[in-house]
Length: 307
Length: 307
Image (cartoon, rainbow over all chains, first blue to last red; front, side, top):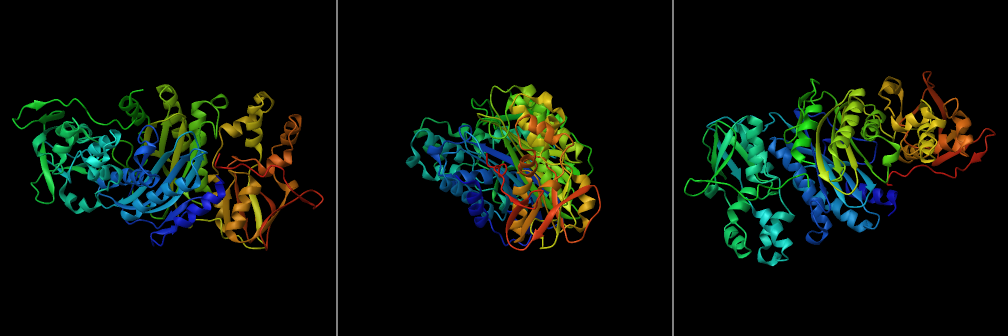
């Protein structure tokens, strides 16, 4: 791979006419017009071998997923996306077309969510890794730490779908649930939910799994939570497809990662396209209650990010 | 390594009282108070094996160098540093103390330049890599593309010192030039030079080597340049130490990377703590002129970043 030729091709693809971007890819740094609101920044990474396997995804999917995983953290902060930077490590033998497909997937995901890639870096290394920094703005950023006892807990969308899709791929059974596989390969960050968060007290995105991410929110807020497992929303065929593969649909819904749905808490009762799944309590930790109200312990406690 | 224990220790170290940082490490994203000026962002990476070898640096040095390499791009844009994010890939067997030393080195470099680390990510992988995103602000960002024929070319500091230090390390001869080794291990970004850039027309930092980085500036500006090799400033013992190791001091000064000095152009003649090394010309490319005014071709054309 010739560094400068590849960089020139990448630059060509990353041109943007977003008026917020005063200077995009190609100089020592990018320049973004002074935002009116607070700036919200986060970085996320995917590493070949730890987070994905080449057999399960196209390079375009890898780029898309890496970008969405990062953008989702902005949604959880109630921030609007502005721009992203991409730092890639690519093995010598990867080939220029694979590198461009990865960049294209990341750029496609950025555009689909209203952001532009404005900078990046290329380096050589033994496995592919993608480090995505995202920048957004928020008039009133929402944190993990504002939940109070008595708040209701809501989630957007359906849960466990990405985890089920990943398990189908790993079992070479993608045809048994293509919609689940698509949820894992092409997740969306829930910026469409930002208006629903107007009265939220705290929020986190589901990257590690509902129980674990809710646990992070509780720890940051100094509270506990009761999570009602039967209320956790899943896709209509979730339990049937899971059972056909010997998987527990409830465990997947409560602990499966990478759905990038939002979990938020609210002192008031809300109506809208989201689901109440429990309540914030005094104390600490997340209690998982089954249909009979009994406390249930999950055997899979979620997905560890550092892996 | 336990992910959450390590993250907790890192968070403890990265607490900041910078009033610009509304929310630092620990939530889904960091929040920076709305800047008055344009936001300038860049990302840079160092990968073990490609950019450094464990024998030549402490982990603290690795973290420091990675941070300075990124910050230097802000200086080249005439931007003041605000904050940084660190995405690290760490092998399983690295050990928590090495990881913390790397973070400490990066944080030390950030603080030394007036920035705070406000976020990051940890992932596992076969070799260490550090991806550093930096954010600054600038009322009037300076680009690479404003140089015009007739502009004088200036450089800050001395050049070739880091490259000489790296070669001494690689030759197991660090004792022959400890000050050069220190220049490679502990570079500084030249934010102190920002006031001198008030009338500059273009700027780039010396990461790949003076001739190559000036070449990037010329290409972006659509101009050529004449670089007078005898005027390129070097340390007093540069030529003697280089010669003692069979190296050409002029080649090191013109093509050695990682000094993180600034090269800038200016339509007016300037006096100050920097050195005029040549002139912007019509045309394209960088002509290197020796003491007799003859055009000289370098045998080492600089350092390729994608390596």
